Length: 234
Image 1 (cartoon, helix red, strand yellow):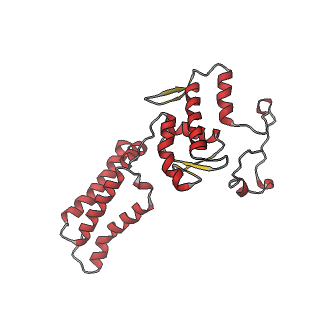
Image 2 (tube, rainbow, N blue to C red):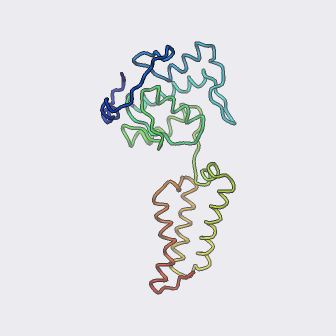
């Protein structure tokens, strides 16, 4: 039985007869009808004397169960008091594999909210929450959230070799357009590549459909100009 007051997700579940049957026959799985899993996680650790044991660890930070619990409580307070979210509201999270994102995930669940790992936005209200969460939640967590860029994403996901291949391809396009900068199509290609390069410093462009649409358009430009009798040719 859920205590969530926002029934948006619940009202869109399949009929009960189509849902999987959840069985909790084992003695250790005899749980109350209502249970906050995050509260149970921390309380069980404290009851077993594990409050000072490491829970979350990164290269630069290690948090014990007690420290993580305090930060989770602060984030949950921000979500429910400052942002006025109520149980059942959906919170979209986007971030790297970090202590900060883990704390936010736990806080969202503890506050009775529903996590969706996609974008760092909270609802409702969608606009004001989006602007406020990015500032309020990292401060409550006490851990800075990573600022992503395309280069950082490439290094994290593909390593040095994959990043070198991607940058090599980008340099090939740029140098080819630079050699033909007397043609209007080449100038357009140069401007588009420069704009994408600047935007990629503060944003993950590879996830944006507009990036691939624009890239495809500028790559097709030489063929279009050639077919139209223009000067731009490979």
